[in-house]
Image (cartoon, rainbow over all chains, first blue to last red; front, side, top):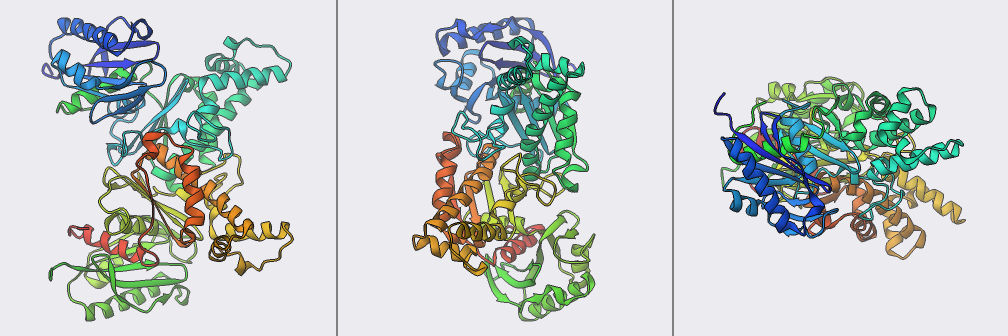
Length: 317
Length: 317
């Protein structure tokens, strides 16, 4: 298919901005990452991203669109970044317009969790499905929802914030005053803090780097009862929030991605058990629980696909 | 508009089946209710419903469709009732096919909470909106979701079960093993039980009929501090489940109907306060919190509109 267009995918993170050339769900060329904090403000950083894009374009013809995933609140229709939690100065930035003006390519800007969900839906674990809930489990807990074969963005492009949903109406207050937010129980840092505490109570000293999700997954796979119990608790809390999505949306599949999901069976087994115990037949009998196909490249792949689709190209699986 | 078609709306309840002729969101003729439990099984009851429908048709020309709202799990596409919680014998009943065969009219069958949501969306408080969450608060707590200008039914027609979502991952087990289900905190019977207990603890004897939601609303409006506190607690729990819908779906409006919602300000005021305290700007700044327009007729009105739409008629507001 020599005429299938390529697209630029941009995954904008608090630490680095990753830019790549994407072809049918594969990142075929990676630019060197841009260090987000090296730049004074949005103007300088946008210029740096544009330079990287132009460099990639000098090596690839047929680039038809740009897609950008942002770690914060975005107006998808207008392509405006309203604010970013971890990057200074990104307030009301018309990123889509700036990129289009500087590159002459059509661009879209979306929330990073939506990009991940879009990648999994169009190119990954959820291909061909019409009703999906995707979660990305990392420092934050993000999500994206597909229903009736469409991305659900809601009235103000905010939909899919599974990490902010509550699993305890009397829980502690989260970032937005929301009591018992899932992210405040199973975000990376909270997992590490809970683990340190659990080992400490058992009289075992563990450094913080022995309590990361990756270290705890290794420990659980080695039979460590404290680590196994921690993953059971993470599965229990995650199952509550996902169960709520199931009762509300009755999806065909739940897709779990992000660093914490890489724990694999030590998370998926208790999670599935707690989830199944709390759903009736039509909600669980055909429900697929799937690991995400894409890892760190999900944001670039999804953003690129969104860019192509907005530019009028059909995204075939 | 002499050619606007009429439709039959059927609201099938555990106590009675209400059948009416609906014209543009108004029930213009009510048949006498049919006592659900007077019939041996589905066949006899379906025959009784058909007799009532034929009687209404003898008085109204231009009836173009039938819509039925059922208190249980339904396959909307096939029109099959899988089972009803409170009516014996209704297992795998092809109600749509039976009605069409016996009346010659096109028919649809949906969950009753979806019918209520459809009525409010097409004819009621949510007219013209594209992103809605509707709740009906009664003995059960039901719901319906509209997103991207479409009803969300999910993979197996189960979506919208807000009453089964959890507000406490360690709460007590509900009907389906789900821990902390909203319905088990703020369903009619649970409200009455909680109120009786609260008065008892305060040394006040109240009979059960003084602890109904309606009686508690009167008491709260009269300044009764125990009743006010009870409504505050109901608002708090309801806000948790609705906040979860907001983070997930970012709706334009929340519509509250059903008997418990008739309490009015004593419920809406604390509910709104708890909800606003737990949402960020894009989720709450333009969010409308609306009482349902329709009361007991919502089911008939929504079912009739669904019937007309499925038969190819446009539902204009």
